[in-house]
Length: 159
Ligand code: PNS
Image (cartoon, rainbow, N blue to C red):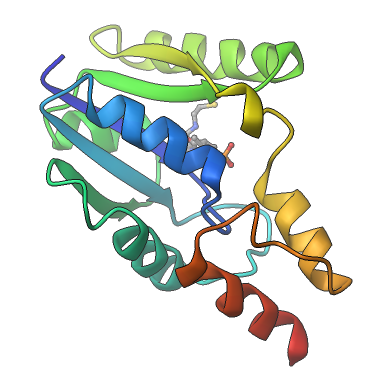
């Protein structure tokens, strides 16, 4: 596996995402962590903020690049000469949506495959929406996101 993409919303990046990023970076020569820029949902963080937080959180990983993309993931992958998409699976409930997405991507571009990594058990419950919800009500999020992200999340809810 030479070049791979790990796409997502990362609003914000969690330890669950970082677990997948670290393990994926060990499986390929070059990993692009790609932040979606055209999400229907109104994000908590701008795409630039999300890219910056990911860059900070992955700065020790030499073969990881962080970028943003708009439009179709398969088009971004093709433009960047990437044939593998990586997605994390936390539980069986993720699978139905992920399967449909990977099948759609394969119909759109049969040269691009999706590989699923199981999220490590310790992060199986974790999602960006849980982090946002906890922070909104003043809960402790230090077990969910890296230090460089913690205060940025709280700040969003203090406004
Ligand atoms: O972290 P998320 O929100 O689960 O990530 C979803 C993401 C960004 C991987 C997905 O929504 C995506 O690839 N969007 C870009 C548009 C696209 O190519 N969709 C695939 C066809 S369903």
